[in-house]
Length: 269
Image 1 (tube, rainbow, N blue to C red):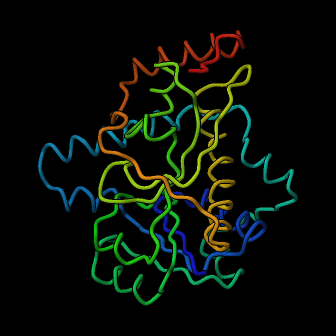
Image 2 (cartoon, helix red, strand yellow):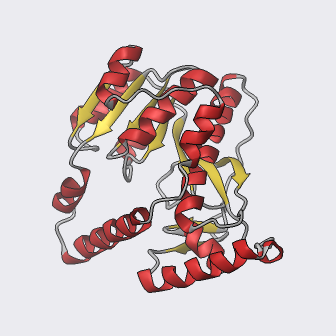
């Protein structure tokens, strides 16, 4: 079974994912790196509403990443498994491991689609590659895997970790197949995330990386052994959430501090 990884601006995460999957499954058959994705999205969607939407998403991402977790939970997890991540670039890591690395500045160009066709991938892991159009989705034989930072089908869309805390829903990660909708593809597997004393939103986001890696590995193995169960989502199930305003996010941070201080109040709904 051939699989690849597609990424944009997530070099450290992708590098860690490569070494983890090499340890737990086997290394990817190729890596596709999308460069200058932000500016090309602006160019492709040159209208005011699209630009405002993109800027809001970029602002949300910066706000979410500005407060660093007190502990690099993913790094600690990899160290516990004996996995060493060398301090080199993604390009050098792929070269050292003999993994073909392809770069593109336009995710949906004919060149990118042709590259995927020639690669003949069964699966493609989305490591922050962007929003995929039909020309990409239809090129991968089985599909594109995405790790969603919420439990589907209830929590679709943006900032669902924060919205889950706000509405006191269970926290978790869902791996699903990407289709033409927003987080509406077949559900493959999920993992709950627990809140521990002192956790911030940034800590929880960092912890989801561990769940992402474990789920990707498990799903790849299940696909290879033909033991995976796909669960379809109904369009009417769940709600789609949007970017959370920074002020509301501050309220969620306070609520999370109260929850982590009092374990009895951690959401169990």
